[in-house]
Image (tube, rainbow, N blue to C red; front, side):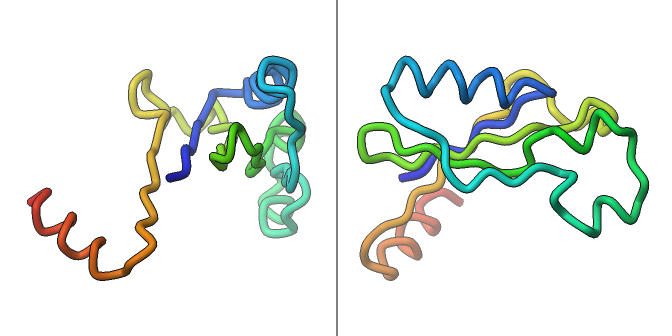
Amino acid sequence: MEIYLNFTNQAETVISFYEKVFNTSVKNVLRFGDDPSVREQKPPEDLLNLIMYSELMIDGTRVLVSDVPQQTKTLVKGNNITLVIKPKKPNISLKVSARMV
């Protein structure tokens, strides 16, 4: 299982907090400004430093953290967490999906 957490312009603060609390360190940080396709759109400067993708390992669980730029207005309290369940056997995914319908 993986956890994907989205924040409005707070991912860096959250990552620092999790690093201390869970005694871990962030890896694979990608900021919006690191992506050439984002830079081509000439976004506001404050957006360029926001985190597009990052990951932490917390007790064997991969936790992904990113910012959702405030300008997009797509993050609503309650929709900022995604659980990614990755069964070891592919056929289990189909069975679970069928039960969810």
